[in-house]
Length: 396
Ligand code: SOE
Image: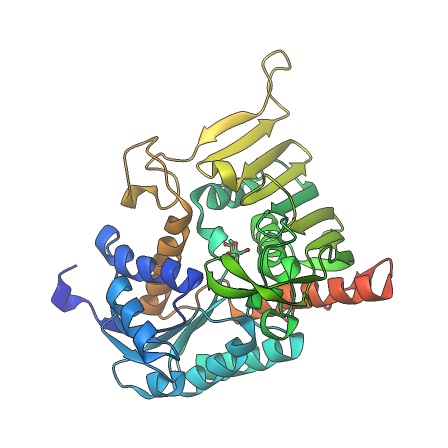
């Protein structure tokens, strides 16, 4: 499509830390590697400090800066607001942007509470009537091997789903002297490992199996209750100062669950697993086979087919780098592999495609709300030491 035929999509992004950097590269790269039906224009970056935001805009490729997100959503050159701030600000910014007629992409988890997520869904429904779209950034859905896993489950290649086991293991908090950041503050982050990384495996379990969570039993654990306050922070790591402060979120979340079909699932999210850096793993056992994925080997999917001749049966390692695999055509020749950042690029590709087609992108705010309800049920179950806590079924 020629540049002139492509409608412009003015983007404002709020926040420019780890997620903001990941989203910035995606907005920049997606139109250069994929034939997008709209031309994203990285119009404005929002940050409270003008100096820091200007430096980030320069580095990441944004055209201008605002120090108040309210100013950004009022601008005529902004069509979409991309929210990459801590969770306590998501609901307010998203609702205001939708009311101003701007499409919204919000980082996960979509909010810090079910009430906030419900209000966001309400705002999204009203906006949808006027053609304004919203999406939650569960980026791992866009890893090619995960898309392939979903396709294979949909095609019945492992039969009926019997059991799911999913883990998200990191170790950046295993050092008791790793300093505090907003991710360890319940008021800012909503929860700890549960919402930060557990939300991803809740979403992926639902995405790959095509089912929803019907109920959970949860156990949350905070191993280190006090940490040094950070003097400076970047990404997930900071420099510890002398002052100390409380950790108000979980380090680890253990969940046993039932899916809508009745299939049991077991999930573990922890930032306290020495040696595991970003081990997001999911294994699904069906009536005729199994699938297994580990993000630390993200270009591979493992498939076991019970129909194989027993002498040579075994997990088949599928290198998900063929042009026939999801998204790969935009990239490199077979075997040359993708990384963490590509999921964010694919997210932009899918979002822009949906906007141009006048369709709702997925995952929707309704999907995000259901994940929030699962997180909430886990917290309640853990606090009350209850055996099983039902999750209200998604509407429609
Ligand atoms: C930190 O634990 C984190 O950056 C998450 O917030 C992201 O969602 C995940 O992609 C990687 O880990």
